[in-house]
Image (cartoon, rainbow, N blue to C red; front, side):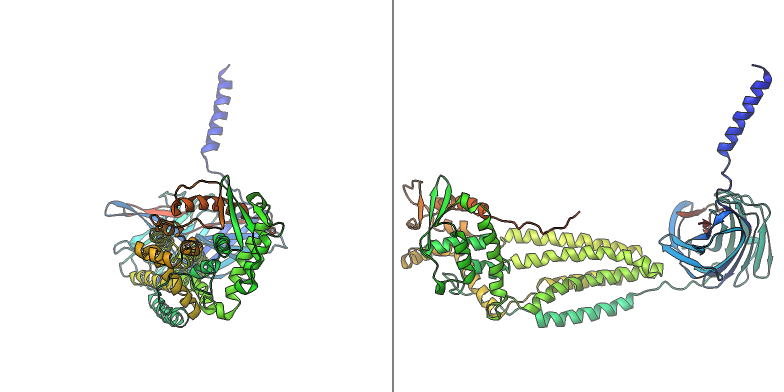
Length: 633
């Protein structure tokens, strides 16, 4: 291969390498022939900016868009250390010089789109936009400056850029620096002059795509008098006081319970069956509440229970008398024995009994809620409790929303920061469940449930606290938010109020529960002498209260007879209430599972960093605030 061939190939390789390292030229469908910027600076740090751009479109486009940043992450050298600081300079008062335009805000900036979707343009087009940027204290230890990117991030060539900056008062022209080039460059291809308080200048060479033009003016410490950040602490204090007072009044009116008088009881309330006791104690009906009626019916002689090979069969002995039962009892009893008078576990598993069980649960609840004289809870207090879930979440919404708004000064940007408050409200619903179940839960389980819910509430609330800290809310606001939320949660948890009849029943049921839990052996023996079937009479009520094991243990050394309504193929040399109950409960649980039913579903499905830096006392191209880019559409 001769020298000429080697040279030719060498030149080709060199050209290819040059193409890879050279910045890409204009990718946009236009060039900027002239870019004129006027900045009127006010003493409060507000910059009133007007931009006039002469664009030359080489292809048909609808128009031009301009991207103006509002969020900045800047790195400064302070006392020899690199420190990163974040700033938000809101952009307001946007005007488009008579051209059709639309605005699109996000947390990083605003996009101004100029032009007409129904019309395309080509060739020279003139666009004018104006807007106000409110700068803020840079928090740089007695350092103030105007550090502004006149242009950057344009994917096209700017053939000529001119600028005029009108400062509010005097400054030293020796403290002005100008930079051009790609990000980080310190060359200066701009000419500028100072005339009084005005700086004017222009670029000397075109700016290639993504090249920047930056101006820095160092200023005296007290040059700007920035407006104080909006502080909504006083407003939040008023809101908190009003909300707290109104909530206390509502709680006193609708939620303050009368004192529950726990009476001494050795039997269940006369006007309640075991299913009713299950509803009164926690305001809900479980399957076990309804199924406990089977034991009660057996005690009353309506049916017999037969155990063979650890499986139970229910044998009907008679119909339930109408004057000794509720409507839902008779309907459930009749549904069990609708097909035949002896129902095995296999018979109970066919689904029809399960449907009847499901209906019976709703009927038990309706029995108490539809008749005013039998209502357990005040309707107004029940509604108010759910309303207080929202009320307890209001501080989270208001505090985070105002804190974010004080930062962005644009409501749509602040609204997303209130979303965690919705999760906070969802977490409060657990308190309603816990407070309803507190009389049937074991002490250890109740404590664990309360602690777990407090931790969950605290985790979700801490997200809101982090938001408040991020937006520099005052310490008083944060403490007020925590205290107010805690007070409202307590009121919400205890808001549901029992009716006088509900309180009377509750006192009787709690009295019976205390007897089951704490009765001494001699008192149990005395009860058995008075009523030999006392163990079986109280058993269904102990079952719905979740303390049937405790009740059977009370009879460990007390002689009682096996019930005549229960037949078994097991042999008991000596009848034991504990052994009998564990055996019966095992079979009864199996039968309950057979009768369980879940209704079929009715349908449906589920399923910039606009950055920069300041180092060693000087700036660089593209390192300031402002700037942004643009393009065609």
